[in-house]
Length: 259
Image (cartoon, rainbow, N blue to C red):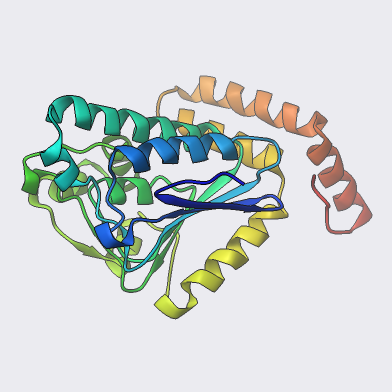
C-alpha cells in the first residue's frame, strides 16, 4: 500500500479510502498534500476500484489552501499555481474515473476544502459541518473547480453570494441548497459512509462510469448530441459483462452480481 506524508490511503477490495491527514493544520492544502492527492487519485483510477471515499482527519474536512505555506514561499504566484495545478489534476482524475467518489465532510470545509467537498458524486456531511468559500477574505479567487460545479449545483446568484460575501452555510442549509446528498449526525457519519461505500461497491462499475460521463457532458451539449451520447452509452453497457448480468438477473428474478 502506498505511503504518504499528508494523506492516509487504504484499499479494501473495491473500496479505496483517502483521508486528508494534516489535522494540526486543519488539513490545509500545501504543495505536498495536493501533489499526494493527485498521486492517490491516480492509484484509484483502475478497474479494481469501484468506490473512493475522501474525508478529513480531526475536526476539519479541510480549511483550504495553507496560507502560511503560501506566505513563506519565495514566489507566491509560482507556489500557488503549483498547488492549484496538482489539486486540479486530482479533481480531474476523480471526475473522469469510473469509480464513484464519495466525499465525507466531517467538519468545516473552507476555500479549496469547500471546492473539493462538492466534487463528490455523492456528498455526505456531518450535522456540524460548515461550508464557506473564504477566498476573497484573503484577497484570493476560487480554485478547485468550484466555479464549475457551484453554478451548476446552486445557480449563479447563490454562487456569487458565497464567493463574494463569504457566507457560511450550515450542513442543513447546504443540503437545502442542493450541494449535498445527505446529512447525518456526527456520531453516525463514519458508519453511514462505510455503509454507502459498501452499497455502491455492489453496483455496476460500467453503469456508474456511463452516468458520470453523461452528466459531465450534459451542460456542454445540445439535446440531440446528448441523446446520441446516451444511446451509445446504453448500447455499450448492454454488451458489457455487467449489462449482460443485470439483464439476466432481472429475467431470473434474482439480485445481480456485478464484477
